[in-house]
Image 1 (cartoon, helix red, strand yellow):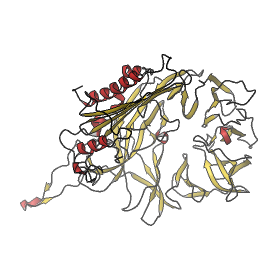
Image 2 (cartoon, rainbow, N blue to C red; image 1 turned 60 degrees about the vertical axis):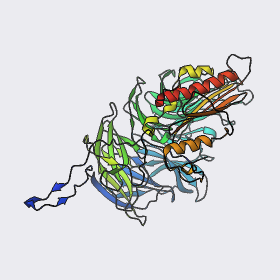
Image 3 (tube, rainbow, N blue to C red; image 1 turned 135 degrees about the vertical axis):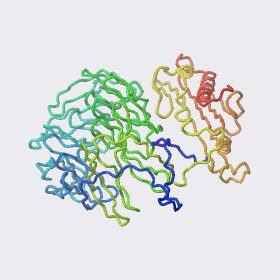
Image 4 (cartoon, rainbow, N blue to C red; image 1 turned 90 degrees about the vertical axis):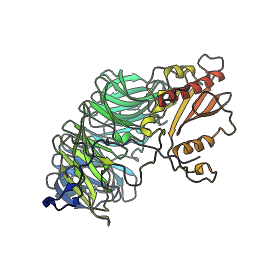
Length: 600
């Protein structure tokens, strides 16, 4: 199958043009090339050489301390937030080795949580409370077993307790004052059916008894107070594979949960009742963009898989505040003065060198303001994501090509400016489109055009948000049944391998349409499939007893549809062979209409 490139919509809009060249004075003729219009550099506050690597990351941020964790060496360092002076290097307690993990934040007293390895090569079995101002270990305690390694495994510190995720998501809690063990919040999970997630203010859990004999408890989503261990609410979880994916916010409580077979970002009220579903159905409980979500000031900013846009939601009302295509290179760093702070790798128009621009977006209305650019030496690299605390940006920078690193602090402007600085694609990345080609910005998320009426042909629930991967599915509704409608839209460009420009040589395609034709001709599972009339410019498909497979080409776009239905053929929830065929054809027609094909 031909390799296909994915496309991301550029984060900056190419509207403004550079000023023309300026004439020299004195009437002597000659022209001077205008300098490219770029943002001003950020004001650097300090620069400190550090021992680091490409995997090092900035950790705790307070008004007086910034920490740097070096996973390769297992060290943790603290630096003065005002001057960059090295304050401390964490000394492990007796019997401890490298730092395995740290809490995401410190509490109001400046205390953070650390999990150490037992000895130089041991497992991560020792928890400790650390004063972030001095680096002093306040106490340490053996967990008795390896720290959990699930997607939400971690350590958090509230005002009165330190919590560590143990094996099978067991919650190991210790009193912050002296490390004394506190009662567990969930029964020992021998089946590894529990899910947990926690931060400094809340502990969320899926209390799932699994299948042990004699345990008749019902699976439930539960919320706890981390200081007291008090159960704040409990609500039943649907038995069809419930999951707790992440705790995104705590006021209101916002969780990634799978309930009734569907996985969403949901907000909950004070009694545990779901209030709002935010955005799309998620294809994975902890998906590839989970690190690009943040909540602040009652707003959740998030991305979704297979979507280049960034969305902002009001957590109280569930309304979409704004959505923008920020570009695939853009990192979400934090919030300062009511703005989402991002860093984008962009090429100013008229240059060939990538620059790092800091751009802010108002949390409530999405207004874009340029905050400045971060300087880095030629050939040097930026390591990991910068971090924002109040009106400061902290960044780990490679200062040369030899692997020397510096930790830098910059001042962020209060608002920034609204100048639209022109940019261009990086050298060598421009695509030679032809007239009539459909470009990625036109085909963006065309798969979401599938209507509720089309989904209902397959006995799928009609009124629901689109999935982030355009795969609508329902399982065990009723038990033993399965229905799935999958739609994939691919935008092809010139130069894709395989078609040889129609010569059969297998060389690169000369045009985007030729690339699409080759993808159509070599589609998996459809060798020798009969042609289908009335869909796009080319269409073919196969109808099986339990599924229909279909591919359609329209200009330089291919649409692949798969409709499947498994279950009791006497059940009114199981689609017939004819209904599967009709649903697949209708889904393709829905997408074609979105793309502008009026022939169907």
